[in-house]
Image (cartoon, rainbow, N blue to C red):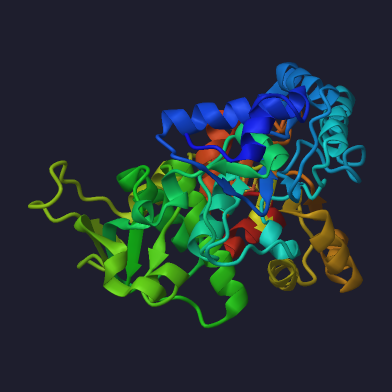
Length: 430
Ligand code: F3S
């Protein structure tokens, strides 16, 4: 790999052992993926913050690096942790877990990483521009940044994003290169999707089908209301990144690269997937894969995805919304659905601390709390220690959360629309 003088100095340890180690990580990645050079980045988003995910070995690794004087050289932000720093006692999070979690946050802060603790940094003013190179690591944030904002990032791991933040650069490979951002699949939508849950189901189905491919959606009807549109797109991207490894998608006539390149954004050998309404009217959507172009021909339906994500029974311990983290407008909508109702079961809505403060100032938090619900900041249902807290039956409107909760929390999951989830919290069952 061709290095600049500064990069060579970093690698030679002239800026300290912490940065040398960071540069070595980036060099290894670059070699593995055939990068010819490094590219400067403007920000880094660091995943692997929750103690639930990284445990003591992760804490030790971070502490060692911090002790070697490694400090970030571009703005860097933390992904959600395992606790809400304000509410963990009130919500009965385990004390020992919380203490370890606080240690991790403090170590990252010592290295200069901002404790934003959110997977939707773009809701708190961190909005990279089209063409900007960044090193983000939470998969739904990566998907949003690449697809909707047109920024360029690979799906980084926690350590590689941190290494990139220390060195201010990342190896130029994968999605940093235009030729790797072309669509591998056309997805023709011939039906109407009506909720963020529908977009989540679509994402879950397509992610399973395309793996790490890049879909171009054609005919995807988007709401004119900007709040709904953003919520739906977040749900779509998050689900595709969870069931598959989709880090970038295009929407014809909407996303920046689809607009800029028109049909040239699609690879000449792209496969086609068609999604249409079923004839009997019962199944709302049926993706149909033309037999001539896909060797492993399969007919799936979104109903099938809904069934996969929904387990038997109607019992719930907890209803969770806000995966990815909710925006202020989404919190407002949730509060309006709750209205004057009283909740029989806990309702947790995940968001960032900044958005929660804005919602408090707008009287939104008061409505939710009066009903018996909570807006959690800094954490989420997947990275909090729910299993340890004895929470087993969970309802959610997020296809990503529904896909992860059984394996990450040993949970029994119910998946539905936002309204169905809130209704479940009101009634006490799903
Ligand atoms: Fe964000 Fe947690 Fe979902 S990190 S995307 S709320 S699993």
